Amino acid sequence: MKYETQRVAYPFFAVAMALFALQVVFGIMAATVYVMPEFLAEAMPFHIMRMSHTNLLVVWLLMGFMGCTYYLMPEEAEQEIHSPMIAYIQLAIFAVAGAGALLSYQLGIHEGREFLEQPLWSKILITISFLMFLYNTSMTLLKGRKTAINLVLMLGLWLAAVFWLFAFFNPSNLAVDKLYWWWVVHLWVEGVWELIMASLLAYLLIKMTGVDREVIEKWLYVIIGLALFSGLLGTGHHYYWIGAPGYWQPLSSIFSTLEVLPFFAMVMFAFFMFWKGRRNHPNKSAMLWTLGSATLAFFGAGVWGFMHTLSFINYYTHGTQVTAAHGHLAFFGAYVMMVLAVITYAMPQLRRAQPYNQVTNMWSFWLMTSAMCFMTFTLTFAGVVQTHLQRVMGMNYMEVQDQLQLFYFMRLGAGVVVAIAAVTFFISIFGPVKEQAPATAEA
Image: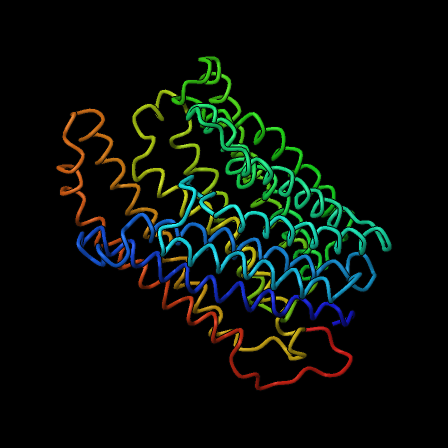
């Protein structure tokens, strides 16, 4: 580890992994309701479980992105973090906001807008924390070296903060509400978060392959250009059925189709750099998560997104389990796996050790990715059956749910395996370190 303030990333990673564990727990609880409808019905209704599950995902990923930024920024900028104290304070504020919102949900206190259910005070604290983070990292960047990686990363983070401001705009008209709601939800996960993912991917490939920075940065510019070009107008595939003008259906069908391209470019980029690389990096598990992230992001966000993004298909499939299949694999591949890849790469250096517990870490990778792929296929088949019976044949919604019970049991089983894999990952990262790194070595 070259810069002492990179250690700021450690508590961010630790808190993010604690919230990741909670997210998995709430996911399993929600999946249990699908097979046992009365499960915790009085103590914690299903909508509270689901709300907690999805909100924890967003919060821990944001915390993971912050940790990743604090880790790589000193190396990219060749400059220590501007103020470690600001970093620790904003971490505490963010953790209080997230934990407070989660507790509020259990008490039935929320704003009711999916993904943006946080009470107003929590939204304000999140905004303050994010602005402190952006000030801290931007000052570090301004004082240091500017690279394509840290510039694209900061662009993605600043745009995420800008679009977050629409979370405070809650018009009374439902159609107008949804119009702007997607400016947060879509433009984060299918827009500016892709810039964050691409910059993290480029950083890891530079570190682990030895390919020249200039080559990787050219690929990075192509990827972010495709992401912004397709993602911005691709927002319209959420406008098909909410009362927006009809021109969104052909226009957004075209641009949504193009949203596959940046993810295809990412997977080609990752494997090409891996094959081109001259360095046999010792952290094999970090490389596994990196290549796996690019691959599953392409399938989850790209292929599974394309499967139901055309308006004449989406007319039948929107709101079915096909959407859940796409959402699970896209979030997992693009963002969860990328944060886990950076953590796997960074932790040996943060703990001043050689890459450690790699076999355990790789077991975690294969268990988690296999279970998530199985869950995706299960939900896809469930969604196809649901679409046919409910949207084509006209069967009653609850009658259709009875026909999907087998798929829901399989989804629950996959969730349990994900939980086992998550515990395995935590053990591999935070568990005992047997071999310390030489004083001059970079793990």
